[in-house]
Image (tube, rainbow, N blue to C red):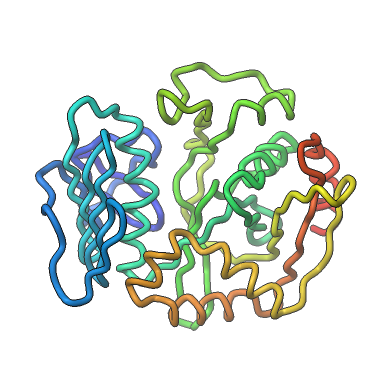
Length: 299
């Protein structure tokens, strides 16, 4: 069995995960094993979607040509590998969909955000897929900032009522054009996160910090064809809450698993006294350097 840290969890797995941080521990929070998954979920509170079924404590995903994933009770994932599935795709969908279900079952709230360390906490960048979260933290990394997380972090409520965040795992995922925009040397084809996808993984295990962190600032990233260059503005409390809430990770899971009240409370507590900015940049134009400078002026 392989032992890892990921998403704030101690993970014992029959599957090897180069993406996760090897870690020593006695008792796992989560076990991952290869076996046959249930054919379906039953019960009055089960919601069925295309290839997905879920209830408050169970989640079943049937991903075509890759694997079936069953996540239950916040502590178990069963993977049924399908014929001709590649290892990278199998791991990718477990680390996104199945793990998100486990986190929701455990009352953790995954947030669609990347982040960097700054002073005594972290600065988080939220936005839709393709908004530039990974590109912006990679650009800050080139300037000497330490990366906190890419794409996902997890909100956790501490005993004193405050909210901390923990990272997901030590890999930045960049599209091919992000290397070109930043003038970075292209990585090897072996680094593709899926064989057919022009997106590449960049590891940072050696500097990955698993310590829960305080959020110091949020930046909402958005592209807009109606703006020229980069614009940045601070949001009101109501605007900030709405924007952060929109960036819940796998919100359908959150709703079906009846975690909306927990999510509302965590987000409300988290953003009290924290500046939340919205950045808008011209679409289809390389504004990375300008965006980094604008954000850095607010840190």
